[in-house]
Amino acid sequence: FTDMSAEVLGIDYCSNLINIAKSHAPLADFKLMDIETMSFPVGFFDGVWSACSLAHVSKEIFPVVVNNIHSILKRSGYFYLSLKKGSGEILERDSRYDGDFKKFWSFYEEEELKNILQSIYCVRSKLATF
View: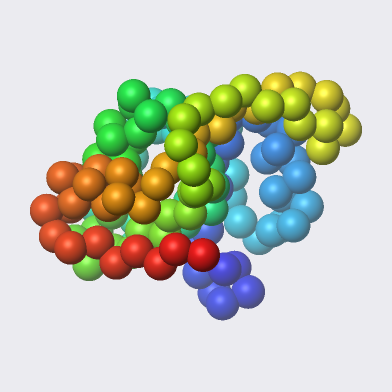
């Protein structure tokens, strides 16, 4: 997005992953922060891009995090969200990024996700399932 002159702010809970992101987006700013407790002013962002980031948030707290994202978006802001399709939650081994650790995943069926988003946004959600 920085190559399109956008001001980009990335967040992650893991400093190693921020370093990897910096190598791919050197013009972006990054902050070490937990998405579950992030704090920005209301209406701060034009857009939020969440490419599978929220798949690492438990289903219990997911609606709270999405509601927080909704509040930090400008009224005409955009929210891109991608998740893993399926059901349930698991802890899965991940050996990428020079390590061997377990990663938490939440999976969502289309109808389940629609219901959550509609309860927060009070509008028909545009969902594309791939």
